[in-house]
Image 1 (spheres, rainbow, N blue to C red):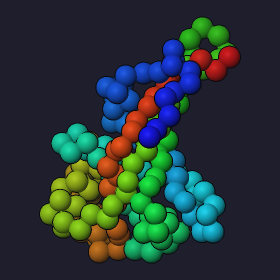
Image 2 (image 1 turned 90 degrees about the horizontal axis):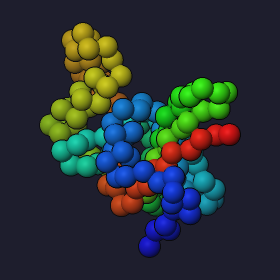
Image 3 (image 1 turned 45 degrees about the vertical axis):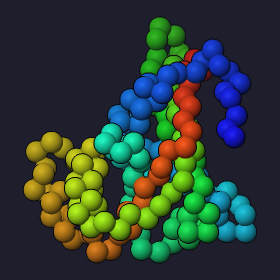
Image 4 (image 1 turned 135 degrees about the horizontal axis):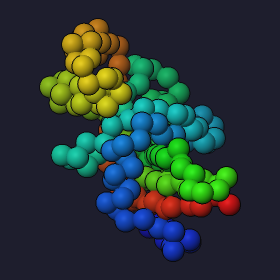
Amino acid sequence: MFRKMRRFKQEITREECISVLKTQKRAVLSVIGDNGYPYGVPINFYYNESDGNIYFHCAMEGHKLDAIRNCDKVCLTVYTGGERRGDWSYHVISVVVFGKAFEVTDTEFIKTTVKKFAMKYYPPDAEAEVDGDILKNMPRMKFIGIKIQHITGKKVHEK
C-alpha cells in the first residue's frame, strides 16, 4: 500500500523515527485541501508514547479542520535542524508519517494529553502557566489525533 523508500541505504529504523517525533517541535501537516489542492501547514505536535498516536490542536473551524473532515488521510513531515560535521554541509534526519486524522472528544484524555503536549514547549518550571492556559483555551480548540499507518525516515548528508 505504501511505497518502499527508494534511497534505502539512508533509511533509519522505526525507533529512530519515533525519537525524532519525540524530540522535534515543528512539523508540516499536509492534507487534501479545497478543490483537491494539497494544503501543507506548519504545526506544533506531540507524539504520545502510550498509544502511538500524534496529536495537535487547531481552531474550532478553518481550512485544516475542513480538509480533515472531508478526507482523514494526512501526511506529517518532521525534520531536524541538521548539524554540521567538519565542513559547510548539514546532516539532516527527516521523518514522514502517513496516517488517518480523527477528532478527539474525550475531555479527560484531552486535558491530560494537552498538558503533556504543552510541557514539550514550555519551560519545565511553567506548569502553573500551562494549567492556566489549558483552562482558558480548551473551550476554543479542537484536539486532533493522527493514527500512524506508515512511517519512514532517513539520514541525509546535504552535499
